[in-house]
Image (tube, rainbow, N blue to C red; front, side):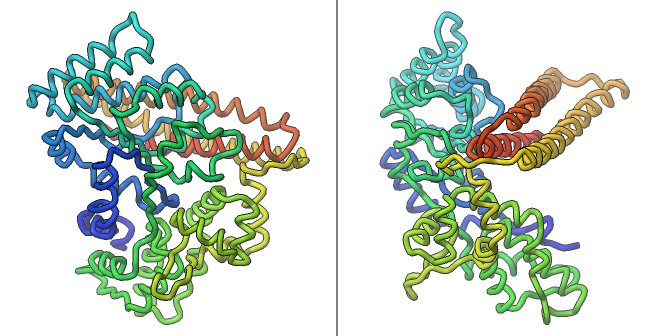
Length: 473
């Protein structure tokens, strides 16, 4: 069995060492200075995995003694309606207090949780008033709090998030509650989707950017060899092969993993890596989709700037973790797969056409709009099918217990009901998205089509990710 398919990297503690500078120095310093932090990096670089490991429950409970409360890494949902946006933040705060109190074992935090839970349930106040009251209660006990929110582009993309939400979060959290957001998008540059306005709330993160990039060669070698250790096929990766994998992938996890899987299978079939050709991996749907998403973070002009290696564009890509800067050689180094993707004229033009940032009105054909609708319908159906399979699994588990004469405990029944309710809410939202795809047919220019397409793809991707994170009972 190929170990890179199920066991790469071998352990997260080893992987954490790759980012020790980020976690042990940069992130701690920013938190100590009460800064809001934006964890920025290309899709597939491992941001979510690393932050979840770093902010584990033991670490977060240990920080309570320093009067610092930290939430678990929590993705911003893609299915929230406008009146549910602030409730997401309110519930995250209250649930964090419960978790950090060790469900009542820490008496001080348990009392604070009880107080805040009561405030959150006050039916005579608006959500804004509840949120302010809860935050003030935390401040009265001299605690500081960090909310760690993943998938933050779902917040910035969402048409349900209003300028009033931005204003409320800015004024409510000021000086009391900070955030660490995880996102593929640089909020203080021009990579935000078309139609998303800047706000004072988003500007809070401008000075606290921490960039994730690819794994450096030394650490990648260590992690790859650890994964290969003791494999039943006796496969070994030469230093030259590992260097080639890093050159092609830039050390970006999602691409490097596919290259390692391919290399392992190739060596098993051929005895060694002589003549290995990774072009087949380049054509993989996962790889091309990932790089297409990277291109959406750039304007068409910036994508063309990659071809001419414009220094300002290279600096921008470095800031976003999309290439590496070798200080000793004083030069930028491309990920070869990504450079190839951008250099290919057809894909370059496609990426520019898909970019939601285009500012000029461009006429668009009915055939293209039909093609976009068909693509989105297929994606919607795929996510919907995944959802229905997950619902079936949970319902069948419950029915199996009943048929065996086993009465599920109240706790298990509640967990199951909560998960099914969440999935059914996703089902409702997928149906709404499916209906909204029809709006593309009436669009009059490319900007409208690409903005709608990008929003729907992002939302469906978020729903798909949330479905994956819901465990069976």
